[in-house]
Image 1 (cartoon, rainbow, N blue to C red):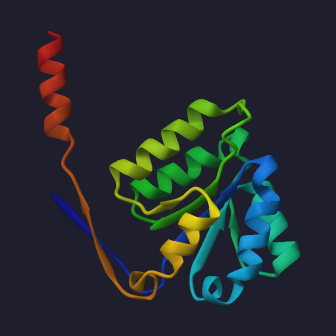
Image 2 (cartoon, rainbow, N blue to C red; image 1 turned 90 degrees about the horizontal axis):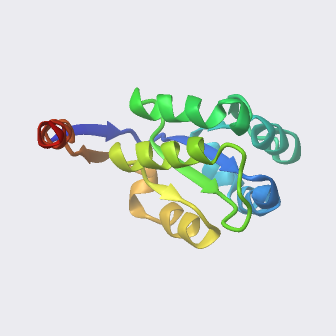
Image 3 (cartoon, helix red, strand yellow; image 1 turned 60 degrees about the vertical axis):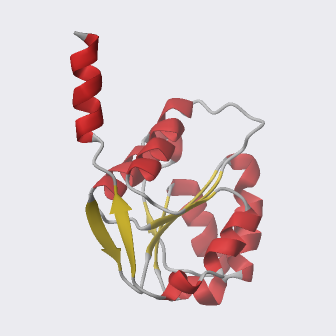
Length: 153
């Protein structure tokens, strides 16, 4: 098992599908002060909206359909994203659904806290760990993958 320490200042990805951008904006406005303590990242349009409407410093990646979800997933694998708030739309198929599924899979593999709605985001942000160091425990899936590969042969 690999352990990764999340520092007191978290690297937080903020993502929202089109019909959830307003919901995320409202949540960010309500949580502006706690969010200012952390480093923020987001996909293209969401980052632009949050920067313009709330005035938060946020590093922008590409729009989700243009590879932004994959960029954030890569940062999770590299240990550069600690936490994700992703308000996705459960009622609308996305042109980049495979990318979204890959991002969620990577988040679980690398033990990243994920809030996919306001109540979960509220609970996670009220956790004692939001402003403390926290040790994530990453399971060693490589042995499982090797076992599956052997069984396939």
